[in-house]
Length: 243
Ligand code: NAP
Image 1 (cartoon, rainbow, N blue to C red):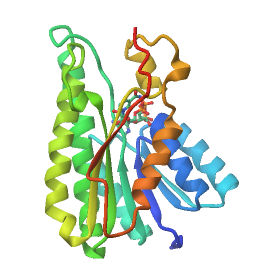
Image 2: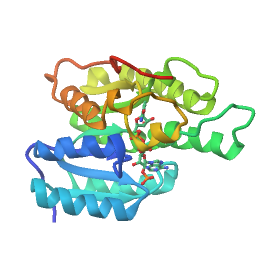
Image 3: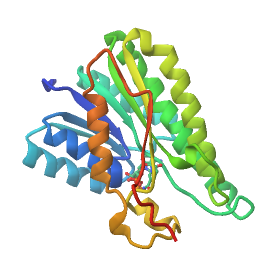
Image 4: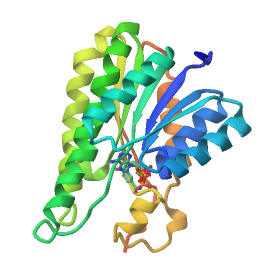
């Protein structure tokens, strides 16, 4: 059955935990339907049940690896047949493999580029015609300070995020006059599984921003008046508190 939420449906990649989950919850709270993508089926099922009960919205879930183009083609095809009012794509899914370049396994280096850059491109490529046809829509790509500056333990992740930056700006110039807004949101450290496992040494994690801080900014970006958009912006911690 086709059912279109008045406010629109937001597609979020990497929505099974961390920042993607917080973004999804913020939009659900505000009454948007959701289409959530991640690899963890169990987590997505639990989130769907929770949000549908709590917020009375519809949550579509797609369990897949965004670096598999054939699967992405299938699921976006399915999604755009079922939902006709997709209003935003939040490209948030990412892996963080950190370590000196000379030590980092080739498979991990490749996976970082495949997920963070190619996977983002695949999802965007398949959803873009939908936005172009509607002459509206938001694509918000989540990046990092490591996409603006390289670090010795960060070659793969930085390369993927620098690539994302070039991709975002180029696409923005390709489609903005059609009415599609493409933005980059770069983040300083956020309290999530990725940052805690990254090896980053922080004195006091309580001083570090939370995923819901990011969700509030994404919500603000999505809800700017139609004739303006934030091309790129960085959300920083006031006190990075790194050792
Ligand atoms: P996280 O807690 O590790 O969550 C990553 C999300 O991406 C998970 O939902 C994961 O779900 C999904 N994902 C990973 N690989 C995937 C794949 N191949 N296909 C589909 N989904 C995949 O990370 P986070 O900290 O929330 O990061 C979210 C975004 O913020 C990322 O773009 C990250 O680069 C950026 N960022 C984070 C920080 C930070 O300090 N945390 C700082 C700067 C930027 P599954 O495992 O279920 O697939």
